[in-house]
Image 1 (tube, helix red, strand yellow):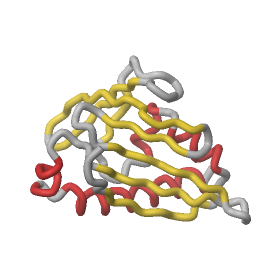
Image 2 (cartoon, rainbow, N blue to C red):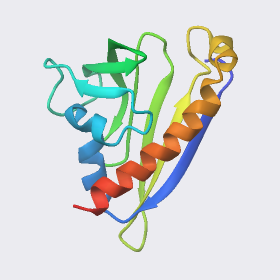
Image 3 (tube, rainbow, N blue to C red):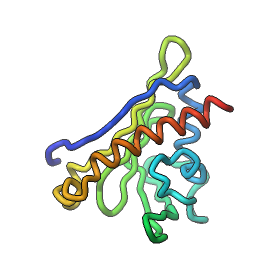
Length: 147
């Protein structure tokens, strides 16, 4: 494992952790809370619910449309989920219930074990992803808090 390189943000969301986790574990719904606006839809072969080791394709758009296949590399029901694709950078969500019935959600982007970390810094992905993470948490809160 190389040097830990990570950007993250957290938000208290007025919803139970299991409700939030159910949304995160459903690849068909990722596009509704994606703050980068690059996730378009899950591929037809994506599982209905993610689990450790599950692979799921996503239809993306960053200038041009493309498809990417991710693999779930961490999974703890109701608490954490993380995935990566061929670039080996990691998207992670960690959920922590609060005493008031809300949930602290932390989203992070980690690129220290990516195939070529300097490329991420050169392309300014950490700063871009920091903004995208904050937008994602905002959308995630809106979706689950509105029912």
